[in-house]
Amino acid sequence: MSTEDDLSLLTELLLARGPGGQEQEVRAICRRELERTCDTVWIDAADNVIGIVRAGSVPRAEAERRAVRIMAHQDEIAMVVKRVEPDGSLRVVALGGAHPVNFGMCPLDIMGEREVVPGVLSFGTMHGTSESGQAADVLSGNVRWPDVHVTTRRSKEELGKLGVRAGTRVVLSRHWRRPFLVNDCVAAHFLDDRAPIVATLGAAALTASRRDALRRDALFVFTTKEEETNAGAQYAARTLPGDVCVAVEVGPIAAEYDTTLSADPIVLMGDEKGFYTKSVSDGLLHAADRCGLHPQPALMPGFASDASAVLSSGSSARAGCIAIPTESTHGYEVVLRDGMNACARTISEYLTGEPVD
Image 1 (cartoon, rainbow, N blue to C red):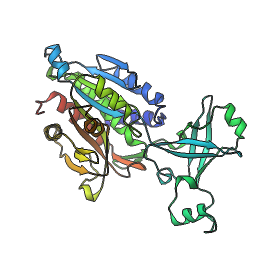
Image 2 (tube, rainbow, N blue to C red):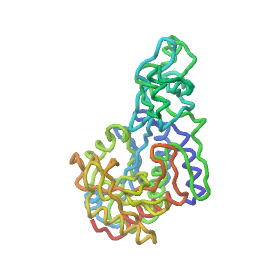
Image 3 (cartoon, rainbow, N blue to C red):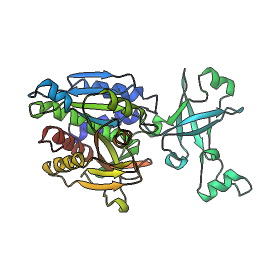
Image 4 (cartoon, rainbow, N blue to C red):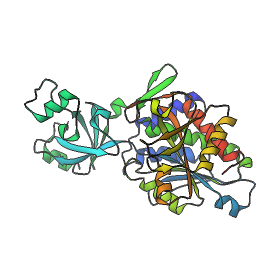
């Protein structure tokens, strides 16, 4: 796909709401795009979307045995209702790795069972004093989930009739989801993991066009609940053929990791769950080199992915992670427009080039 095609698909994915456990809007787009390029597409029992591009010139048993699972996750950081107060305001907690500062005071979509209800995430007044604990936290910049509430302007009874209750997902409103172009970059909430989804879909299309060079089946897996428990990836790693998983992620830009905001993909050597399989990491680095890119190897103790989760649990024998360099991860994120395409080309080259793993 062209950069403009990538941006169009990214915009559609950003407008699709996908809190963990309720990713169906994202899932529908992933399935539609995979059906354009893959040999078979299905949704498994864990609500992962899976598309397979079969190797064209290798015995079937060998192609399946050596299959590679490429994983990008559907879900986004969000909130979940803890309780509905008597005045109709909502108390919420994090769904995934979210803090109030990730969202700020902003418009919300409350995903009731019968209706999506508008709301506003509020930290309370900015003109309070230390007399109240909430105001003290706001004034100090140390805002925590107990300090915030969601204003709905509905009664508790009305919300109940609309299906808003404990466990209801709350997400950033579509009103604030459109991408913002900054010279050669695109910025938005939830580029994690929408930009990697675009890259993975692009890789599927490229790989399908080069299937004669494919010597192992390529499975493109869009997983559920990565931001919470990695449940989708764990299920996929246990039930799909092959023993290699590669997560496609956003990669933090930080001096401590020696990573920069560029189109050159980050290849992780390890993260908080342990070290990735060296042969897989090496294969990704070599693939990026063959694409004329300058990959960024990085060790990130403050990071984790579907791939490190399935590797550390023993659900996959080998794993690696490739990431699109991203500013302000889990906030208002920024990536190069060319970063998605560079990542897609690297993944496809890894799958169709001479394997070293």
